Image 1 (cartoon, rainbow, N blue to C red):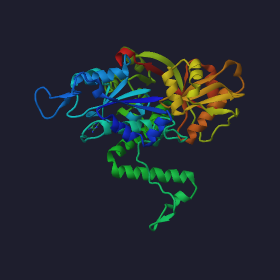
Image 2: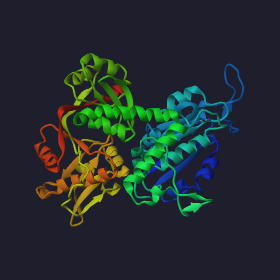
Image 3: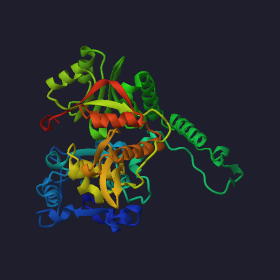
Image 4: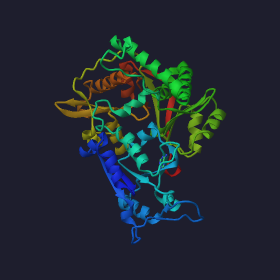
Length: 462
Ligand code: ADE
């Protein structure tokens, strides 16, 4: 369950603002938890005062460090919880940040009032400074509520519909297309005929065009990013097998272009802190790395000199692998009939058989709804998942159930789900895993020529 702690001088505002909504209902059902904490309860000043005038003069009052610090301590104890201070001075809030925050099990939102909060306590407790827009509100509560609403709706179960809102990232950061419902004619206006045609391909094409047209007109800034991504995808498609990981990251709308000079390209998947790199020479690669932030968690590279350059920067080789992709459109036959989407109830099982990621990572994959399990006589005996940067993986089948096509069925099943969502399935197979290579080939995956390395940043440098 995700808990939102809100440190505020107006807890009733948070309760009244969120309780009547979908978010309130999710809290009632224990899918999320809202914990408004009154900062005033923690002041040591006997009249309940929490503010004072700023040193150096100036208008208004400032919230003092002590009550904020003690309220924070009461919530976090000795834990280091992600703490968001809502302020016009922060990083702009967007869907990407909402998705990132939705991964936290607990989140503290700190609301300021008056002219702000004593800088010294902010330095000690805040991990993120976030603004909801270029305007100034009278306090942080409305901003905190906006953030809670946007983050909570991404948590599976909150919206109550089948496809998780996290999968919306596949919609490519374009604005939504127009929608219509009954009646077919209203105020003399007809519903666009294509929507009545039942032709799903035509409908999808029309919707994409509408989204593009609307984005171009209303948000030229977003459209420019969209265009840049599309152009880069086109360039990369000349060598699809070697570039599919970068192309898919861009196509699914969650890749930021950090660098693109000629054949030297770096695309960043912020949520997984993964930077996918393609370099044309050691000099180009060096320049490219100079343009990447120094707190990147992972690099995926396919040139040996890039691996060496990253080692010089303190990165460690995590694994060497081959890249494989499925370029056909037709779904694959699934031999085993009992394959199901897995939820949190399978966390323990998956963790006990998957050693390449933490339990928090597995939990996230289960919550996003991209893990599938094979069941035999109603017992879970194997699984597969989609990694956060988009590749297929995590495949496992219990030893005593191997040799009867369960792995192939699991993989075929996930490939089909990916095709339904319009994405190209691809995966990384660790060097030397002959069984997996054989399976990919049997299913019709093609292997890229390059060798790929996942390079891991060390905790102390991030
Ligand atoms: N507090 C006051 N104004 C704000 C804003 N625009 N964003 C976040 N917090 C705020």
